[in-house]
Length: 452
Image (cartoon, rainbow, N blue to C red; front, side):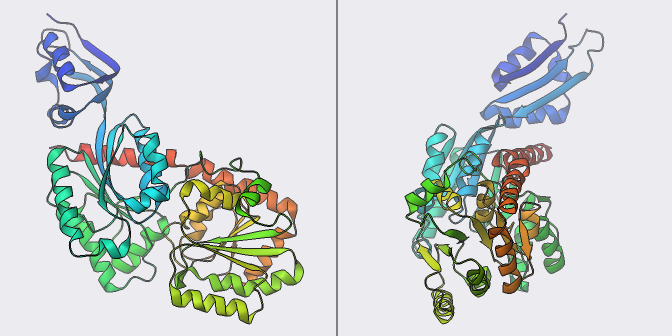
């Protein structure tokens, strides 16, 4: 007669677990069917962490039942990147690999996102991050006719070669090809359907019908989905920030300014986003005359990357018309993520003027993490992301924005308080460590629910 088997906090293969089961004869029959299927289906191509299992074999008092059974899968995840969101495309997978539940992540990405900061995280997790180049990351090249078949072939080979526990999707590009693959799939909506038309809602509804979980990155986006498109996401998981990179101690202000060639004797207002109409940069430009009238030593740094040319021409025209040439600096071009903390630490104030955002914009969260006092447009998901970490101005109201800017620039005590509140807001609720734990919890639920 065997004795009761009890295992705690063991990382095991199915083979080793079966050997324990064989020694304690009869235990096979005592595993509940769902749990037995879970072991057969998921541990067979990797490892699992047995947190606690206590089973008594036949012939032992109480041996006809499982006393306790708690395990954690070491999952393999297929992760599709989106655009050049380095913080999401690489920082999040990196933090996911640091959890005990993730065995490895296969990352579908492009060369350009890697060059914009992905290399930093790939180098830090090269044993657990498997990179597959399925695009260049440059829009006009990836849209060429011959690129799509190459991408489809690569994905087909990857899914045939390796068994994944979860597929993490961030766009509709690969969904049609992967919808037939019998692996739990989740989709993350990187945006808020504030102005969604029927065609957009139809596309999102189609995605919703083909995945096992649909994630919005803000409660606001979830609300707009319900109001505009008639359905709700299954989960809300906020974006997060790598606070190892983005924090108040990353750079001293004078050092950051010296590195960037910025004046040491000016108050620097930072605006950092894609230069396009929905970002509403003109709100800040129209606010500046009132600001410079009160505080002469001010300069607004417009840090931008992707540009809508007509909109850029409009902004530059407004700057000339208001005679603000001496007060506005345009910094155009892509900057690797690892260098961005310099811009935030060099600044006295960060402004988010956008009228629609998934979750307040990642750049705003980065600025807050660095302890940069922040002001945001009272629109879309901005209030939800900002929390108590900054000030809101009335939607698209340049006069109110000017008042909020002056309030911070002329009150050092308030500036210090907002700096503290901004970094605390991120540190307490929006770190990538916390976000990754939420995704792991979702992965686990999908894997368990997918067992039949």
